[in-house]
Image (tube, rainbow, N blue to C red; front, side, top):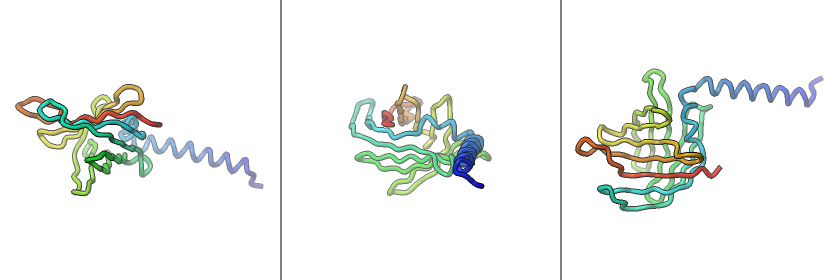
Length: 160
């Protein structure tokens, strides 16, 4: 006879097996786990090295599709983005696809010692990195006269 204990045992086994296949199925995506969380912080814009504005920002980052993609929902006063990050085995790179009311575009990215670097163009890049315990930092740099300069910086604290 099928008892409640067997039901829970089968459920536990399926959970463990599911968790194992999830992490082994997408090992490159697992490397981005430091981005996952509900983040609250501040977005700062720079112009010629000087702060031009600051505003509050909120970001929710989670895995979806059994770990095959990472979803980023960014909300600030001036910017709302819904971004998908995935890894392409055939191209051996990450793809960063931000969506806004103005449209979307697909950008190549690579992971370098827990820094996800998104190559927006030859002169612009976005970098996502851990900022200490429970911290996340995102910043944008533009290349001017052969030098990378900061044009935005978002700093977040994980609320979970």
